[in-house]
Length: 113
Ligand code: 5GP
Image (cartoon, rainbow, N blue to C red; front, side, top):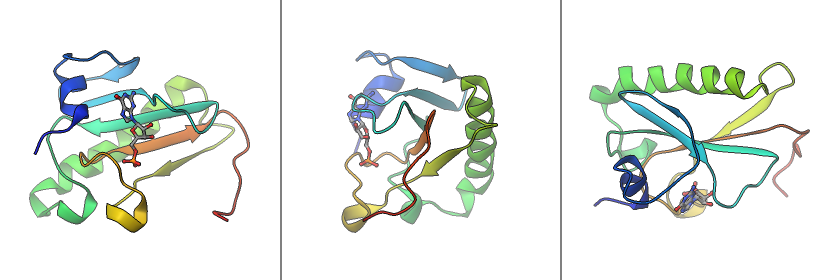
């Protein structure tokens, strides 16, 4: 089932887009948890990492390289950043279109609790 991120891909609702190519889109999170908080998504609708298959291997590998490229473009790579993907309930996933959070622009807390 499609999510709000599909509407962002299709430009049916606005987002502050920081990167786009044929297969991927990145935009600022509406509720930032760090000075820099960008979401990176493949345009292909995959529910989450648990739903990904071998068929998605190349796409997901390229996604990681795109994340690194975006972080460099944002100017946060040298100082460092964190990449998170949440999966299902215990992972805190709210939007069921696979996405990776890029968090940075400041020193991040090390622990979850
Ligand atoms: P999740 O908890 O699923 O890993 O993360 C979903 C993220 O999407 C949250 O950080 C939330 O703030 C963000 N988000 C939800 N709806 C929208 C939206 O309409 N626009 C943008 N830019 N971010 C959204």
